[in-house]
Image 1: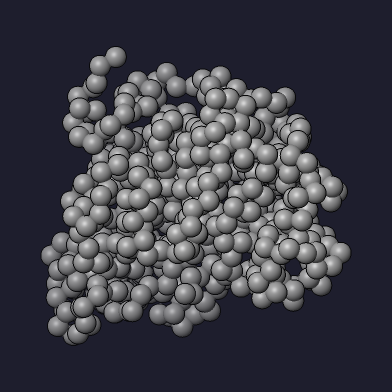
Image 2: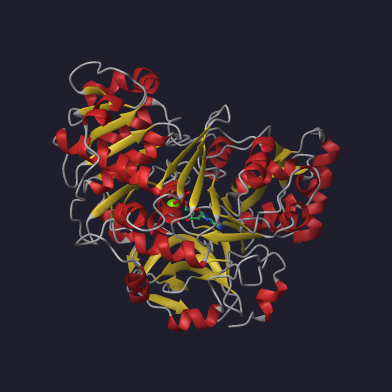
Length: 583
Ligand code: ATP
Ligand code: MG
């Protein structure tokens, strides 16, 4: 088949994209086709079989599956064969300890090999994996492990001593702690993982799991309140595979880098599972964000497909670095972003500075995988999250007081973003919160909690979270729209916008702004920014107040916490801060 005009116009293609034509693929797509492509090598369905053993039993066995970059730049590679054997060993460790199907295994480590081996080994054993951010303090760790009925915790000696020791009495169900870096067992129940691994055989028959068996427990980011524990099943792997094929556009020789930590769902679905389902090499960097380091990783590892987040892109944009001139990014073919609205400014920056536009996509912890995306082969609309993936139906709906729901078919009208909950990776519950789970479903739809609109061509545009939308003088104002306008000003690095209750106009639009290095807050700059926004947005929508901040409060997954800006502004209780980034 030849190349379509849109493919030709996409100057950076070096391989033929998986998605030939969006409309056509949507029309003929079926999940049965994915089922046929994913030939399980066991009875039933198991994520780790699809991600690891399937390749270890094929001619890809010696291909590098995971490449770890340690903080000091040391490299540690695991082929698919290595990964199969070591995850078998880990599964045997669990089995020997009496950990069985459905039991919860938590992980609290940095991005080290043990975390990835534990996650996949846990799945082989039919147990449930729940990775946590290692930067969490003791209380968030306790809250999640307690709610998640943790039976096993994989961690490091330092993290155990700093954060977990004090919690042990409060976690009576926690039976085993596996220390990834300890040469010796500390006491009964506090084991050296290397020692247990050494004693375990590398042969293991994957516990037969069914598509609907629970596999992953993932807590949401806590942007809007107390994090919820979303339950995912083995069948979610269909969506991981499918989106990695069509949206990320992974091909066998790709070098893929997802910058997210597995403590956030992106770091599990796309930092662990999805790339492995395609047998590609996935880069995992142990270190935290550093612009020079990141560009060097793209260069030296010859990354071809890169999946990152707006917060990182904004940090790169802030700096006076010309990446294309200073680094060799010639291998990079596609850049994707998720987690927050991607300001149009960032898409343009990508085109100018990286030589590639940035493809925004939208999904949630609850959806387990990408749902709406600017595909590789589609014309990107800067500021839009793109179009629903094949196999997923998305719509704008309006809920009525009598409990009924109406689908809004006309373009350009905002409402609740809803999905037909019939795709494989939709969450199967909020752990211990049945009531809240049920409330997410109205009629035939799953209500996402985000507000959006669809344009004439079927692209979806994010308006804001239900809780964040500002009502001012009879207008509905999307904080994202105001933030994006402010971001266009050369002095602005980040912006967060809230509505402040006001007796005259309902809510007053207030902006918080962090400046780029070298720019100082001043009354003159404030007036300039207010004027700039007014000119872009019109007086009704533009902020009336503006305050400078050193940096804006964010979750560990990099999302601006508008609810915290608002609580602080109004002197209200700050609410759950377990996911607030503190360093
Ligand atoms: P919580 O549910 O605890 O408040 P959270 O919603 O931030 O936290 P996640 O599941 O990590 O937890 O994030 C999903 C949300 O992130 C989406 O519902 C949406 O609000 C936002 N989001 C993700 N990707 C995009 C995107 N491309 N554009 C706009 N918003 C996005
Ligand atoms: Mg959410």
